[in-house]
Image 1 (cartoon, rainbow, N blue to C red):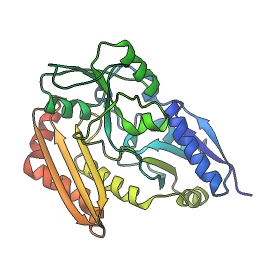
Image 2 (image 1 turned 90 degrees about the vertical axis):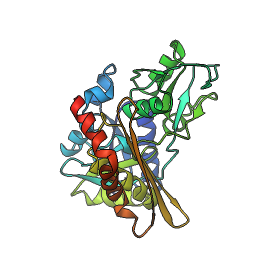
Image 3 (image 1 turned 30 degrees about the vertical axis):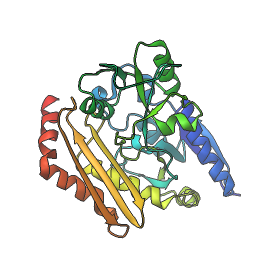
Length: 305
């Protein structure tokens, strides 16, 4: 009988759901596991906007430390929260099949959002969502919204906001997507949004082999392209960068953009490559975008800091 695999997870309902999904997958392949709960810095400070904290890996750092200290064997993360350069000694063990990559707008309970009623008050802590929203609706106002999914939904219900922006996958996974939610089909997601990643120590062959049994290669390819785009642009929580790669008819179609924080400036790129050529698409797209106006936006953002 193999060892009991200790799964590190944050304590939020969504994080625990994701960890239990991995626990079930391990069990399906004959492995015994248990959850170990660890609080992250991002769960402790629920007031400061993420783009003001400006710390990459704010939701993953505590789990990385536990992993390197041999307190857990694997950690489960929303892939969009993981820094593009992982901590030394930690590697990707598996990427699960992607759920919805879309963002949705959640109005107050029982209300319907329409974009033709004049300026709206929208809540989000994401600088990416804020910039894209203001690019489309420059007369709207944005309020900060932090907390786990349940806390944010409660704040929406108690607020005077016209709506708040959530990741569809997060609400759908725990059965909390409201019926009046509106899909923002025009909004490009965060790199790797909707994907779940499992990481382990570099030298842990047992966990590497165990997790390889439920690794999804297509999701890993697409999310990896998006993360390469983010990495080359040197983007973090304070930079409005979006990316999406999809496999269509044997090709990878990639879309990426960068905006100024106020949404007034935007540069975007679309590329289509064969699957064989696709692994370098994200980095190549980022370099092209920088050469065609993206660098000027990036410089202006750095000058604001």
